[in-house]
Length: 416
Image (cartoon, rainbow, N blue to C red):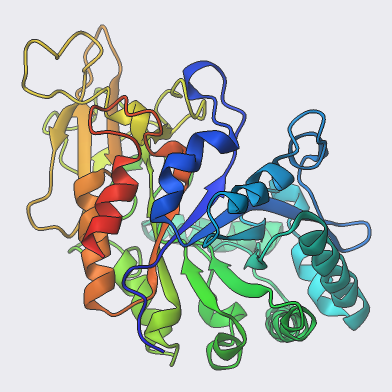
């Protein structure tokens, strides 16, 4: 099978944005002629019965109200070549509810309940397959500590316990069994099966690469959010760099993510590289360097935007309106961020506003059309399977940035 250079697989996560940011399934139609796949995220596991279930019945299933399951799969009627998958997990559950993804793996009966319910849900709403964005435990962000700090950390772990998964081998084997059982159950109906590999998960523990890879059609590397204001609130840095840069953690970049799977024998054409349509933002303080050069001292997430309404996250359609253009006729008071591009094509772009006594500072690492094109060129050069946009609704569906609708999508597609 040849590498699918012209493939562009686009996961879609709907959010109930209000006002100008509100997105409905019909709003993404202009993007679909450029896509081969669409992934709807996210369904979740019901911890009471181990079944696949909608995250929100009102949004996903209740046809008189939203009924997005049917609306999204209904897009295939006007776009016959499109395949629509349903994704499960993806970090959608609350932190205290994620252990159910591990306990489900521990017995054949619990796995069977999930497999049967998944097949029924796909069939009921005319999905074309299932994407397993399984919620394994995340690796905690390591911090540099002095001698005293290391001693105290060890003492604290003694009393508070470790976050280590004591059943990691059992869960690894259980997940392998789940993939095998799903493949067997879905094959007869022609359903696709894919993996969505989340960031900050130790894939060498939970994924048996050589056994799982032949059982799935695609592996979506969600290569975003290597650094976020939630995980590293006191230091702003590039959130989704393409390559390693000196003094950073060697594994927190797209290339390292990809090579880990290739080096474990996974076929290149099955690997789909995730590209964000959003940026991560931090608040700057009086201790932050006025140069803006990362890594830079920060004080937690930046203020929420009008579209995402999430502190520390800005959609491209929000970020572009904050960047100064150098055109005095356009640069009004809302254009507050100085834009810094990356000629090396290794790290990404960022924008910043230095802290002032009368106004807080802001630092944003973001994806834009140019950087998305760099990543698509990397995918083509590595003969990988394609690009996955995360998520489509946070690109620029209405062209407010001045480059037409879905500019990140179009730039990535044109570079493949």
